Image: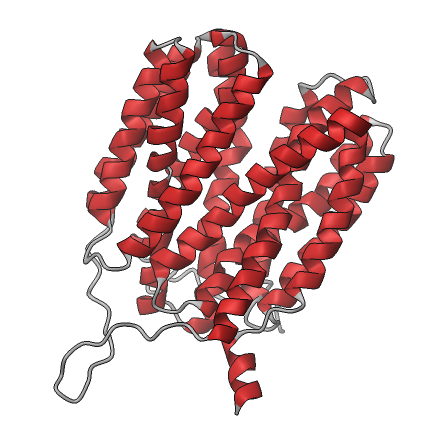
Amino acid sequence: MMRFRLFPAVNSVSSPLFRPIALGLYLLFFTAGVVGALVLPTFSLFLAKEIGVRPLLVGLAFAGIALASIAYNHWLGHWSDKLVDRRPLVVFCCLLGTLACVIFALSRNYWLVAFTAIFLLSLSMVSFSQIMAYSLDYAEAEVPVERIPLFNAIMRAQIAFAWVAGPPAGFLLATYFGFDVSYGIAAILYVFVAAASFKLLPRLPKKNKPVNAAGEQLALSPLSPMIKQSLWLCAIAFSLMWGVNNAYLISLPIHLKDNLHIEAQWMGWVMGTTAALEVPFMLLAGHYASRFRLINLIRCAGVAALLLYVGVYFASELWHLFVLQIFNAIFIGVLAGLGVSVIQDLMPGRSGGASALYTNTTHVGNLLSSLMVGLVADYYGYHQVFVVNILLVFVAIWVFGKVKSPRELAATSS
């Protein structure tokens, strides 16, 4: 009797997806996600309520974090590909994160907090992309090519797990114990990630670079103009997709309260529902990536985003929003699960650059969405932000359709 299996049998300890080094990566990525989930969702509340600054200064701090993160990720991401070992860089960034959280816990001076957030917290976030880069190095060396998207999806699922409980825990800690306790716990978690990086992650062997006739190692060949064009298209489309997601997160709580007359605290439950639902879609996307074009799966995620934003625009009851989270889960699950695989496919052997580019699309999207929401909501209201989201998703789907994989480019040129 034949038994249907949704996923292949990969749960053997001999599988590279479940070796100790892979399990260590999953744990570190999860813990890094918990740190982000504790700090970032409560930071605007910390500035507005605890320190008591005006909204313009809150937005200034977040814009500074986004810009600094883009610069740090771009420079350190490409520089890190020249390093023999990424782990010291992860430890250094985590220690800066510890220092930043300690300052947040002790200080209530806006300019000190803003300076710390822009120059230390944003730099500490490089640890996230460097752990991802380490995982890409491991995948290229140990994981079969057809299983790399699944491995990347499992890695990204750890962030979803972290965000199921992280934001509610952060708000509860801040509400009942104070921001000093909340950020103190985040500082301890940063120390754990730093210490565990050396304990759980062994030093990876050096990559086998091409050699010349004299046996001297050659640098990686430069990317072709067509590959660079596909990377630019991916960067634009991913930035738009992450931008509409951030615009949705900014606008929905205010839309709930002002237009639907529903308490904004329900947004936390809506976010938790999405995070819980998106994990199986991440894993399914990783599994089916070996059967379908990655870009086509990403475009399907765009279709789910269209259904989400159309539904939110017309939703009039709270239960409508909970039902619509199935589309949100498909959108984020596929986008987050396969996004880095698309970039990695275009930049083989450049794990640091690939993870930096992918991470920067989230920062660029956040920056653009903050400006977009401010303009649209100021003139037309938060409800109309979802109309702009629909238009931008259409643009992103069209741009993704122009992206060509290395294999398709090779077939075209031959």
